Image (cartoon, rainbow, N blue to C red):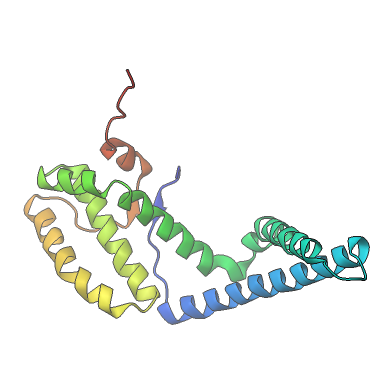
Length: 181
């Protein structure tokens, strides 16, 4: 992760509708490409007596590769992928925090301002993800912890709104790598 990620206001209903649409397009693309390539490989390389499992499997695997290429080269840049791309970037940013969450929590305990900002972004990002995905149970569970952390930031004179995650903050909080002897 090299760019600063910033939370954006998204309508949860529109988000869910748009991501369902993009997922359907990708699944249909895969199904059509895989079926076509499996059929083609059996016709070109297969045997009329049967036993063409390997050729079918090869066609399906080629379908995965072709669909991946179509996705990366064409679909990723389409406007109908915007919501899915945003969700992916949000989850990727949250995962970068999750990967060092022990260090973030330890930093919060020591009142480290960077750790405090990262934890606040994490709470705000999780809240948004839960709203976008309509996960009311997890949202409810998180809100008390989030409010408590926000109050702690206010008490320390830190800005509680942290809509952005700077990757340098993650690097600062990562534990030092142990040298091999």
